[in-house]
Length: 72
Image (cartoon, rainbow, N blue to C red; front, side, top):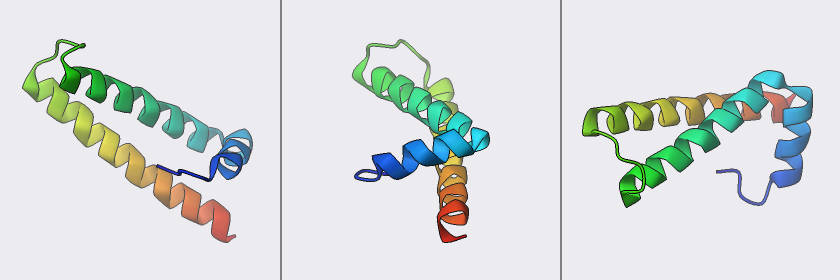
C-alpha cells in the first residue's frame, strides 16, 4: 500500500496524527497476519479472520484520509 509514495506518506504522518496511528496499526496487523499465515504466529482461524477484517477497515480509512489530505 502506498508504494512509491513514501515521501508523501511520511509528510502526511508528521502533520496528521490520526493517519500516523492508522498507518502504524495497519503495518502491525499486516505483519501479524503474514506471520500467522506462515505459521510463525500460532493463532486460531477466528482471530485471524478478525485481524484481517480490522486490517481491511484500517486500510479503507487510510485511503479515505489520504485522498482527503492530498486533494485539499
